[in-house]
Length: 248
Image (cartoon, rainbow, N blue to C red; front, side, top):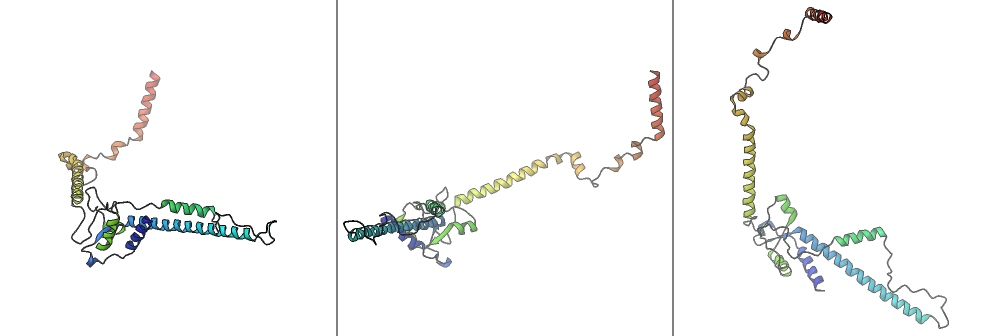
C-alpha cells in the first residue's frame, strides 16, 4: 500500500512541466529513462490492481449466484428454470486469446521497479554530470524545479543531485580527460605523417618525387629500333642454327 502511494506521488511529480529556461537557476536534472521506468511500473501496478479487483468481484458474484440458486431449488431436485451457476473463480469477461496473453505478459515482464539512484545513468565515474552532446542531453536529461526534486530526493535518498543552473556545467575532470585524449590523437596523427615522410629525406628519392616532368626522363629512353630485329637477320640466324645442327 505504501509502495502504491509512493508511486502515485512520483507520477504526480513527473506530470509537472519543465521550468522555462530563464527560471532554471534552482533546477535539477533527472534521468528521462528513470522517469519512463517509473511511469511504466506504475502502469503495470495499476493494471494488476484492476485485475485483482475484477477477480474478487467475479468471485463474489459467483458465490451470490450459487447461494441464490440453492435457495430457489426445491429439495426434490432441480427446478425447470434453474441455471448452472458459474465457477467461483471464473470471470464474466471474455477470455483473451493466447497471442494477446503472450503480448500482455511480455509487456508486463518488461516493466521493472525504478532504481534507487534516479540519476544513475547521468553520473560519470567522478560523481558529477556526465559529458554528452546537446542532442543526447535533450534525449537523456529532464529538468525539474526545486520543489519536485525535493519530493523525489525524499523518496529516493540515494540519488545524486545534479544542478541544471546556467553556470553549472558538466564534469571538469571528464572535460580535461577528453581534451588530453584529443591532443594525444592529434600528436599520433602527426607522428604517422612524419613517419610516412621519412623516405623523402633521401636526396635521390626527393629529387625523383619533386622533378618537373612526372613521366620517364627522356634522356634515358632508348629508341624503338633497338627492340626490333630486321627480318633478314632473323633468316640468317635460323640458317646458321640449322647448319650448326647438321654439322653436329
